[in-house]
Length: 186
Image (cartoon, rainbow, N blue to C red):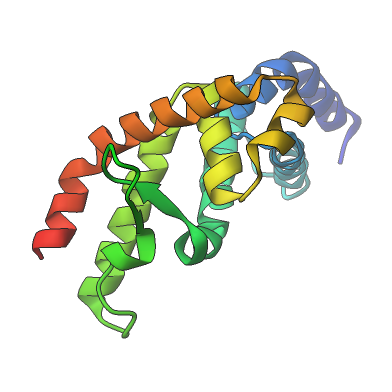
């Protein structure tokens, strides 16, 4: 790489790193994952310069790469989600396993499509949640962490965390009800 290319990378990093980190932080709950995504984005920027791929508008390019890395991150966690996660479906606290919403695990194109549709809708619904609700929901339901552990880590009262999860469940239930009905009818 040339000195000019190094300067362009340094300038872009100085100019965009804070905005990029905030963009990623709003979409990714785990701080370690945020750091990984930021590192991946800037690594790809360096690789692009090494391969002499001209990037005219570095800022938008960085955010596009970040969005793709975030999607990759969520997709890489799908097996963990499908095997372990459940969500409350009624006010009495009844739960349904995501696995139960899917057609059989046989290699069936329709079942594969339904599974993909379910996870795409779930990712979109999670992304629409306010940050605090999303973080608690993901940490408790998907990562399996206790409220006591989350409270100790964040300093947020357990009752506040419970309320945030409850609001997340209500929003997710409302957002995913149509898809749930579709799977249960089909």
